Amino acid sequence: MKKYQKITGALGMTYACAALSACAEATLKDGYADEFLIGTIMPGGLDPDATFTDDPIELEVVARDFNALTAENCMKPMFMQPNEGEYFFKASDYCVDFAEANSMALVGHTLVWHAMTADWFFKDEAGQLPSRELMLERMRTHIDTVVGRYKGRIPYWDVVNEAVLYQGAGNSAVFRESPWFKAIGEDYIELAFRHTHAVDPDAKLYYNDYNMTKKEKVDFVLEMVSEMRAKGVPIHGVGMQGHWMLEWPSLSDIEYALRTFADAGIPVSITELDITVLPDPPSHSGANVTDNVEYAEKYNPYSQSIPDEVLEKQADRYQEIFELFLKYKSNIERVSFWGTSDSQSWKNSYPMKGRTDYPLLFDRKFNSKPAYHSLLKLSNEQ
Image 1 (cartoon, rainbow, N blue to C red):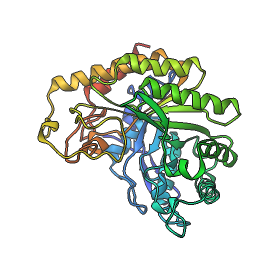
Image 2 (cartoon, one colour; image 1 turned 60 degrees about the vertical axis):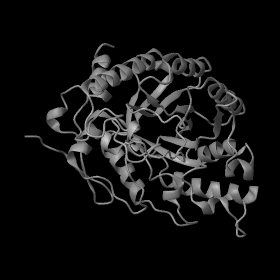
Image 3 (tube, rainbow, N blue to C red; image 1 turned 90 degrees about the vertical axis):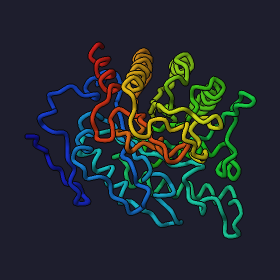
Image 4 (tube, rainbow, N blue to C red; image 1 turned 30 degrees about the vertical axis):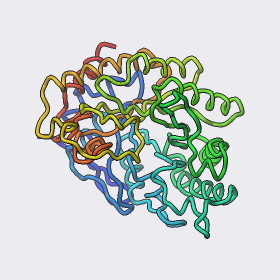
């Protein structure tokens, strides 16, 4: 019979840690302990007053196999501060307490983003785009309050998220003309990093983005980050999200990004890894959270079950990608999956609602999948 160690956090919540009987078994975090952190997310948190799962099986899996944790939603601005000056910390406090109780490095996600930020951030009293001064004041106040609350407790922050736009039609990358960019100018990125560092000098600060296997975007982000670091801006690494498919992107495109940042001496983390097994609608590209494609049955082929051969193909895909990660392990700080169980994945509703996807390492009952075992086997070969 399994025994659980119970840890009660400051909120009076009880966390189920890894089963003692499983401690002697091989785990992902132990297998890659000499290479990089292995992370997952604390899912949900869409309600500012939300609590998270108390399922002991789920919590056991999270604590057993992972040593890094990202809050999927609850630390995003629209949930942290839905109205000006009104902050909700119940869910984020839970994440911080859970991570500390289970010796997991917590990633704060995210401070400055054009999406999932309440409308009031981007409007003045007249309903117009705020002045540069007002936008900077709001940005600094948000950082002061959120980062300041957890100073010394959150070792990593995704400070700025998705500030660069890849333009597929012209094969180019540009600064996204977000409200932050329009109100402040492109130096909002620099100012966000400098202020976050001033609030918590010990935290490692990341720029995070998707489509980071597109050469033009990789080159643009490299130039942006390199120029800022040369000026002393405290950007400590670049996050590559990693919402990938069975046959996209190519290994050569992934390696180009890893090699480019490694050659420049800029640390990388794979921040949001999942591998969908579903066909991608032709109108969709990347990971823009505002994309919403109309449902079509042909894009949901595994609504009842998934063939074993597809799971094996997914396992092979995860393995070949991790082989690349190991090749560049000296420059990779963390590999985080964007979820633990297939049941929790955002890919079930993005970019098309109503589908059944299987992009993660554990099935809907938290049983390990072939992909999990392929990665565990690979770690044992190191």
